[in-house]
Length: 181
Image 1 (cartoon, rainbow, N blue to C red):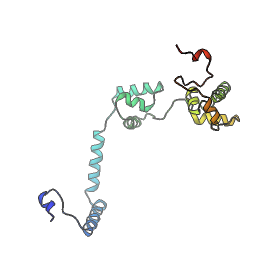
Image 2: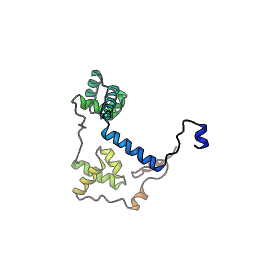
Image 3: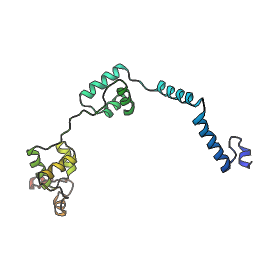
Image 4: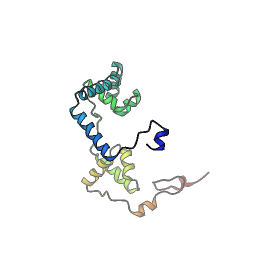
């Protein structure tokens, strides 16, 4: 026994490799063949279920109302002060769908395509344009490619012509806008 173990009885003596192998084999055999192991697992599972957070009927009604208004599951969970996983599990346990039912736009209208081309000529990025219109960047790129419009990166010249200075303007600066007080 080492001096460290002698000073602190809570420390275990170092096990040899052979002892570790024997211990692992005994543990695996107990798990595989032990008559009490299944009962032990069941007790643990029952305790976890018993201690789980349950939704009150008022919380379920609040959740359903918020979901009908278009709230995302994560936002509802944050509002109720519980985790998203707990909310989803409890809704599924009560037979309520957790699928995202918010409408998604998958196309661009003709006037939006013209606006996108105009914004692109001003030097705006796809992420900015997508946020401005309210669609995803992937849909924007797909629709532009389908209409034969380039989705390549902006040339360096376009980046240089964007506004400089404190006002950071993408549009052509007018002399009136540049006058300082």
